[in-house]
Every structure is written in C-alpha cells, then in structure tokens.
Length: 324
Image (cartoon, rainbow, N blue to C red):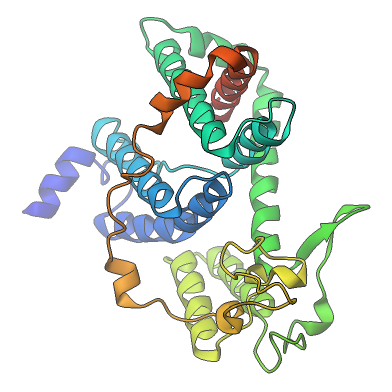
C-alpha cells in the first residue's frame, strides 16, 4: 500500500522505473556524493570556519536541496554543495582578503565572503523566478556547443579530483599534473605505508570492475564497487595516499596532522579503517560559533566595497553557468 502511494506521487513506474531501481539509484547516488560531507568542511576550515559547523551546514544544505528537488520538483536529481566554488571561496576570496592588499584579519575575511555569497544567493533566486525570467534568458543565449563543452569540462574536473584522491595523479610544478609513483602501487614502500596494500590499486580495480558491471548491465554496479573497495581497504588497512601529505598527494593536514618533523602526530592516520558507529550516527551539534556570521560580514563592507561587489558578481556568474 505504501509503495503504491509512493508510485502515485512520484510516478516512477510511468517513467519506466521501479521501486527497487529507485532504491538502488538513491544508494548509489549517496555513495558517490557523500565525500562532500568531509571534503567541503575540510576545505572551508582552512578559511577559519569551524569544521563541525561547516559539516552541519553541508549536510543541511544537501538535505534541503534533495527534499525540494524530490518532493516539490519531482525530479531525480540530488543536490549538494560541490567542489570548485568552495576552493574559490577559500583560496581566491578569503585568502585574497587576508593576504592581499586589504590585509584583513582571517576572522573578518570569511564572514565578509559569506555576506557576499548571501547577497548573491538572493539575486540568483530573484532572477531565477519565472516572473522575472532573466536567468532563463541568459541560459538560452548560451550556444549549445558551449553548454556541451561545459558539461565535459565539469566531468573532466571531477575525474581529475577522483584520480588525485586515488593517488594516480599528483601535482607537478612544470606540467601541473603527473602520474603518481606507480612502482609503489601494490605494496606501499614509504616510511608511513610499508607493508600495507596501496589504496591506488584497490581504487583502480574497483573502478574497472564498476565499468565492466555497468557495461554488462548489472544493477547496483556502483554500489558494489564502492562497498567492495571500502571493505577491502578496511580489512587490509590499506595505505591511503590522499591522507598522506608527505607523499605529495595529501590534503595539507586536513586529516593527518604534521608533527613538524616530517611525520604525523598519529602515524596510523594514513591507513584506512572502518568508521566507528558513533562517528556515523553521532551529531556534531548546532553551528553556534558561525551561525549568522554573514551578518557580521556586512560590517566590513564599507572599507572593501569594491572587493565585495567583485566577489558577489563572480559567484553569481559561476552559479548561472553551473546551472545552465
């Protein structure tokens, strides 16, 4: 009875799907986008925003976006904060305010940037209303080839992120991107990873397995691949190059905290381990430290009006093209 009610509301049978397919698709989508719950707060924490507060905001934004898209728009699209804008927010805006000509204290820079994002969001909402129609006019004026190229560019960007987290590509001063240390990909031979299976190998095998399963039309291919790789990594305590900043692949101490002597305060941080149930079902608490911080940012606009307008316009245009 409940399943029939869901079908009546969402109409997935009429669209050629089924309840089982929708469950599999939802789980697969969550597994492929859940990384943002860690990566986005880790990125924003570099700007001074408390990690737990950013985690709460990331999860809440994803929840609201998915609920509105599913229950109101009735479309099979999952929404969550994405990569790209968060890096621009931190390195381009906050660091620019803090270390640029303005020399603004960090605890004032990120609230000002949040204020710009808030105003930009209001403008974006207004121009997106059907009664206004400006956003639709802007999108329709973009050539079709450019729209296709934008999608391909975003896909390539996400592929680079995935390959970098897997350890297959690394930063390079001359070529920007280079192949990782493939000689160590079976058993890690670094000081921090000796004797542990390398996560890059596990990830690539899982990726190829997913591709084969998808090519053969196997349902739940992404779920099986992600869960299989995770379980193998947990069982073998696989070495994770993405966590090891010393390997040139890591995240500047987001997970592994350097001890100042070339190592880490917790040497085991570079090895995969299954999350504790308390970490999965725990509650980080309300973001009391940063809630309403954008309001404080308005107090800094007077001396930085030109920067505020530039940041606001930049975010607005990126949002428009991201949703084109």
